[in-house]
Image (cartoon, rainbow, N blue to C red; front, side, top):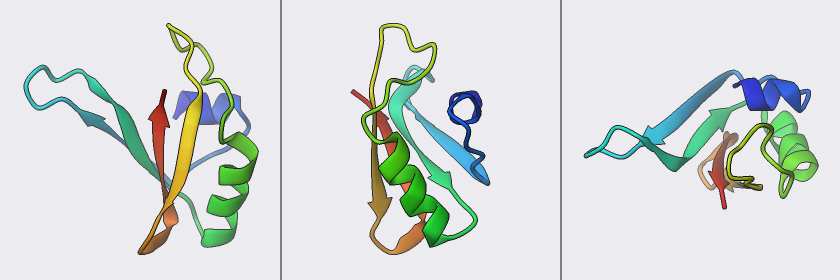
Length: 77
């Protein structure tokens, strides 16, 4: 959530997926926005940008979920 806020966006909800064996972040997750328009704006604005404070540095990769247009999937490279 902090990374999105640092980039000037506020998702409704974020779900970070975790490795079921280690409990560590799996490197991807899902965000929900208030409507499809906001989700599309975020996709175009942030896709490919560097994730703030990521160590090592990662770029954010965003795609819309096919059947849930207010959800986007996020992945660090």
